[in-house]
Each structure stands twice: as C-alpha cells, then as structure tokens.
Image (cartoon, rainbow, N blue to C red):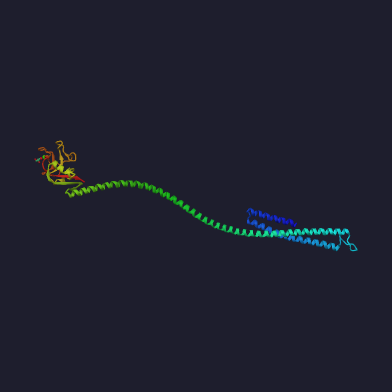
Length: 342
Ligand code: MAN
Ligand code: CA
C-alpha cells in the first residue's frame, strides 16, 4: 500500500516536471501541484512509519503469543518440542525474517525516496522563488503597461479631440478659401480695370504734362492762353502767306475763328491777318485747318473782292464783333495772329 502511494507521488512529481519543461506552468497550477506533492510526501512518510510500526508490533505479538500459549510450537511435558512443532517454528521464524528483510528493504526504499523528495522539494523551492520573482517582474511590467496604456488612452483622447477641432478648422478654412477665391477673382477683375484706368491716367498725365510744358514754354514766349487756345499777336507785318509760314514755323497756324466768343476776344486786334482765304476757288472761303466757312463775321458788303482780294483781315472799320471781317489782297503786309492748341 505504501509503495503504491509512493509511486503515485512520483508520478505527480514527474507530471509537474513535464509541464514545467513545456513552459506552460500557470502559477496557480504550479501552486496546486506543489500543494499536492507536499501533502503526498508528508502522508506517505507517516504511512510508511505507521506501516513499519504495525509490522514490528504484529511480529512482536506473534513471538509473544508463541512463547506464551505454546501453540502451535507448544513444548511437551518434559520440556522438549515435537519435531513438527519445531519445524513450524523454524518456518515461522524464516517467514518473519523474510518479512523483516522485506520491511528493511522497503524502509531503505522509503528513506531513499524521502531523500529524493527532499532534493526535489529544494529544487521546487528554488523554482518557486524564481517563479515568485518572475511573477513580481511580470506584475511590475503589467503595472507599467497599464500606466502606459492609461497615458496612451489619454493622448489618444486628446489627439482625437484635436483631430475633430482640426477637421472643423479645415472645413472653415475651406469655406474661407472658396470665399477668398471668389474675392480674388473679383479683385483680379478690378485690378485689370484699375490697371487700364492707371494706364489711361498715366497717358493723360503725360499728355497734360506735355501740354503744360508747351503752355509754360509758349506763355514765356509771349503767347496768350484763352479757352484752350494759345494766341501769338505778332508785331511784324508780313504778307498773308509769309505770315502763315511764320506761324507754321512756331508749331502753330494763322488763327481760325470758331465762334462769337473767340471773335469778341480777337476784335481788339484790328488790321491783323486771320487764317481765312479763297485762293483755291474764288468765292469759296476756307480756313487754314481745311474746314469750310460756316459761321462768318463779315462787315456788311464784304467780301467784295475789290481788286483780287482773296485773304481775310479783321477790319479797321469793324462796327461789332459779328461784323468785323474784310477781304483784302493777300500780298499786303499786315500784322498777324497765330493760334496754337494745348
Ligand atoms: C478799301 C479796301 C476794300 C474794301 C473797301 C470798302 O477799298 O479795304 O477791301 O472792300 O475799302 O470800302
Ligand atoms: Ca474787301
């Protein structure tokens, strides 16, 4: 019986070793195994001791019984044993010696097993401590991992929140971008218009500067500025054609009278040539700028062509601004009025 229990315990220990070698030892399972092995060892050791004690006790009782009751090896009246009784006693002694030897062997086996179990216990204790250390390491790692997970969860939540805000910002920026693109198109159109206006204004400014320079220059040379025209009242007397040539050389021409206001201004310059003639076709009066005469301010009775008179003057006898011109021969030397435009 003790031998069977011992073998079972051995098997348990072997099972546990195989699992450990396979690396699949959950700590709880190991603890169970260790608990089982420990209780088995203690139980077996007690069982072996009790069995040995019982066997010794039985042996002692048998010997005492034989000696006390004399049966079956009872002595005869004369104190001698019958040969059969003696044989029986010898047989029993042999059996008892054999049993004692068996018990001794079992005892030796049990002591050997006990020592093996002590060694295994020591090994298991070492492994237990190692596993405990590993457990602590794993628990520490687990704790750190849990902390890291909490931090990562925190960061994830923050990033998720930032991501949502960024998406809103992105959407808003996209809307702003569309609006800005529309405004950009409008402004680009306006820029084009403004550039055109700028070019026009630049041209106008340059033109005005040029005209202003011309005005300054001519006024410095004695020209009179009135209603966008410049007039040069010349003091030398020349023929009509020579007078015109003189005006042309100064970048101007003989005066063209376009309206009554201009006529009123010019009336103060009597006996001066004006830029009107009918040299091309008699009776067809034309201005020096090529336009035909439409609004005229002749003296009554003029033009009378009295002695080949093809050029016009402001008459000495002008009675009113609208009755001031007279035709005279072109060859006469007269004062003359040049006109320029700014
Ligand atoms: C002078 C000249 C003429 C003019 C007559 C008018 O003879 O001036 O051109 O027509 O006067 O009386
Ligand atoms: Ca005349």
